[in-house]
Image (cartoon, rainbow, N blue to C red; front, side, top):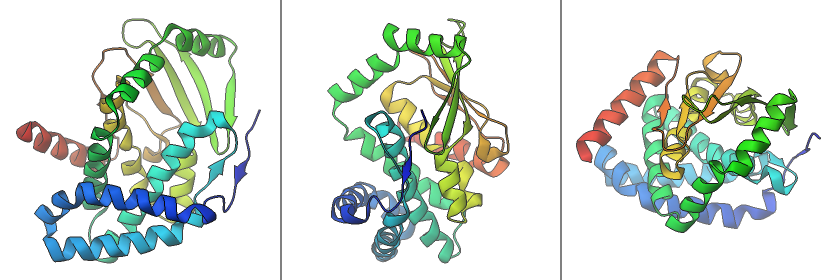
Length: 249
């Protein structure tokens, strides 16, 4: 069953969403200051907040409790778009904007309660979920939720446990609708921080934003996050951030 995308859903929820943005900005401020200085960091925050506030009524919302995870991803994308739009205004690259977004998401996930992370990891790799995904794969079922469309893949138990191909992506559609195609492949890289924090063991080599026919999500219990991009600038940014994080660890 296709779940409907509701327009203007978040207009009345601005205070809550702005409060969440404020918390995230506080977590990442030190990182931004180290790169751009205190005055620039404060100016960036004020403009990002204003831009995000203007963007809030345009954020898609998918009806139904089963779409909660997808709605969370769309909200993350909206914050990242606000950062990108402001950075672009001042002549900064999509990669520079992404470094801030990646750091912000890392810091935010570090504050996520450990017990919740543990439970989400258990659910992701539970026998119940694997059986459910296997049934969908065997049935050749394509699930359509809002602007997302997915097909399921049976794991081989060695390279991955189960998988899902996104043949349509609401996040990608949202970024395109905002005229930020250049930034779209970077938004896909949010899954690096999410996989690391939530124990997805995600392996992914293709995305729609990279011009591929699908986003090939493959999950492996206990596996390391292995996400790459076919867009050279994005891949270079991934490798640069990884080296920086390795030096800091």
